[in-house]
Length: 218
Figure 1 (cartoon, helix red, strand yellow):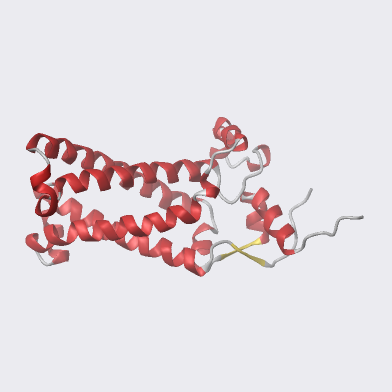
Figure 2 (cartoon, rainbow, N blue to C red):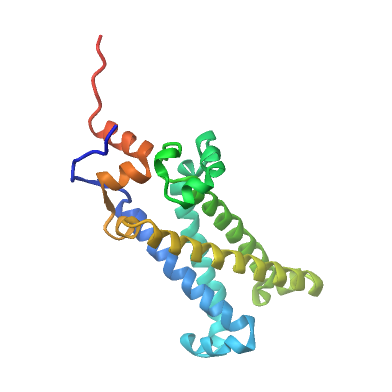
């Protein structure tokens, strides 16, 4: 079956979803920069972005909490679409075809492919690890409830989760540039029918069927 010739645009992300995404991106960047400033003396110069060391230490956990709250909204919106299916597992087994853009050999992809779904679950686990370890480390509020040893362990967990999250976001940004048209979908909210057919064919079939359902014969 040939690619649809229609030039019409399909809604990929609603305005609410895009607002959540970019708010999360901003909160994550601010939390990452302030966290890096506190992580190592060589990066302490980043604290100047937040008004100096004391303000960086004060603001970091609150900015991180904002990121967690927004991520929970983001995760709730994506939860059903992020579940792995048998087609996703087959997609992962054909990674060579994915890398070489042989999409005609791959199972039809829904709204998100298996790589995007796995990235979502990595980010979910990383956010959860950062939240729990951050609570243990937040001495001004919870310092009396945890031992020094546990705080040290939480600090290590916090650093590992932060590293995983930063790597995940780098992969996410790279993939957005790699798949031409993805960034436009998150900026303006729409993609072309051709883009949807090529990269997310099962989703294309779903949204076009929902928009123009055929009446079944009696």
